[in-house]
Length: 455
Image (cartoon, rainbow, N blue to C red; front, top):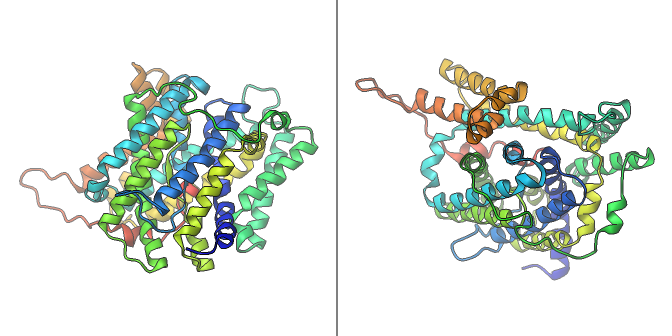
């Protein structure tokens, strides 16, 4: 355990490295389901608080829970489209949040329960399937990014005005300039700096409202289940659980990578402990008005860069993040960002998710016609709800309506079923096909930047 001042300094560095992802994700969900003002600030603060709790669960741990390595956890952008779809299907805005948080709680508990047998399920999620799903996630989110660039509300008179596009362009330009000319720390916070500069420009143009900051208190915490008792819809739970499985598959590679960096072998028992922490952190997040938890890979790069490998440094980062989550003014500042400024950043974030999906797909054998067909059909089916949401409106029953509203659900189901059909289903009397086994450490350590925290 390092000296206290070292823990504080290095812990703060970790916080700054992943802070942007921790605040952007709740912003995306809140704006996607039609929330605004103080409620966005509450969700941001809840996200910061639960990021700290999840990080402590992994780095410090409990009996049988947590990998006890320098693992930083935070909210996952991979879950955004499913959460938005679930929230809108349940009524949108505040009315949809009980269903959203119910699905998050149930999916987290399910992952906690199946963690010991997860290695047996991983074979159904080879790079062919996960790459397809992550690509669909990126494509699905691009429509959300486009709406934010225009100002957030297509029905508003100001939607799509040159001023809205200009604010998005300023944010995007700052991110691109920092990505080209900066190195190290500034490169890791390019999105955060872009959002800050874009918001400042919006304020100078009279397009940003900071009145909520003065009204927010310095210290406080939103009560658990603030938006009502959780509602556990079948399709909603299934949707979020599928995302949790994808996140878990990606996280396994991250755990192996961290073990390699710190010189500690990661085995099946430790993977089980790590996934239990993932599931428990997600369930706790749902109860505290927040969203699914995942590993932040930029902090793995920070550990490699600084060679500071103590898990207590990461634990200090978790404590700092929890403190920030108890300061409502922090959430109020983030909530003051105009949608068009956020859109300038999400163009990069969401497009990167699609690119990461392509990177993962590069590990699959796309010269096999069956694999090409699987990817093509799944992406096509996953794109349908974005192109024509009217399909969902014509579905009988609320559950089918929610199913056909989410491209990620349809695309995930398509990829999973086609993978089973092409590579696992054997008709009586047919020759047995050899399916290459999935080694998460070999597949996923090649790409440390994943959809859940891109770029």
